[in-house]
Image (cartoon, rainbow, N blue to C red; front, side, top):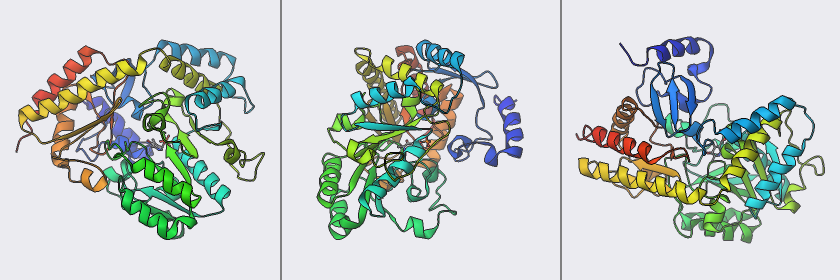
Length: 431
Ligand SMILES: *Cc1c(COP(=O)(O)O)cnc(C)c1O
């Protein structure tokens, strides 16, 4: 009998009423040959439990938000206190100002911030603002970076688009896609050439400062600096998309780690503490172009939702604890080194990368500096690794082109168990 029989039944029911049975394609587990995705019943700390009662050590963390682990007591208390006062008012509350102040205090480049409901909304709005502010239409992104599913950003995208090998999405008019130029990640020279030729038509350059949607690909020294220099030179705005990296790789995000100040930055995932939140912010002069003060329009019925703001405030407050990121870094480093060493012992070529608590392991010799490199990975081997790890009780993202997230709830015993499992699975992967 399958250890996923309840999930299989739930998936069958879902398939009848939801396209592909899922509300976000990456959840489907199709690319890794699974009959169904595990349906989740509950989670706590570093553990997640599926509908068949299987318990896993969770390295997806809701795709990034759960940096404190699931159901952190302070976050739960803050959300239930907000719930007691009402679920949504469609009117300003003090909580919105407080979360905005926390983002501004954390990120020097952000002087004003607008809350939205998802990372997609944040990047879509930032691009619109950049176009409205500069009076230009074209934008530059990088192959394998994912910035949500807005029309202009679904070109050569990472995450599910990469996993499912979708070249460009039907439904995005060619005329829209024509305004988006996608270049190889980490190619500073190539970028410089493009800016030299057409920089005066580029409204914005948007980048994942650490690419986490094609597996994990850190920026090479000088890459982000080149983006900053060239955008300044040509009057284009630099948008650093910190939806994944913000409050993850450091409290101030990747921009603090690499010391790069963008014109606009986008957030999501962690700032909602597990509830749907996104945000975009930047220099006051630019942000003041937004309605109602300025002419660039963007709105949201549920934006700044009180429960979501409360979850964000509680999460960020917790992240300010002394030593928080040092501890997370230490645990994550042990995991990254351990995975590499288990692969080495089994004679399986892998390229492991890590920035803070974001990890990637490509089944290739590497090095992996861009999406073409990432695509040299042995996907068939990844599938066997994924399935083996799931059987061992380790819940990984079901794609070679996604990152792993370690949370503060992962302890030494979790890492020991994960590495022991990896050792057993790796030993079956040769050939
Ligand atoms: C997840 C992600 C998004 C999209 O956020 P959603 O909340 O899924 O819409 C955008 N940019 C990056 C870098 C992301 O990782």
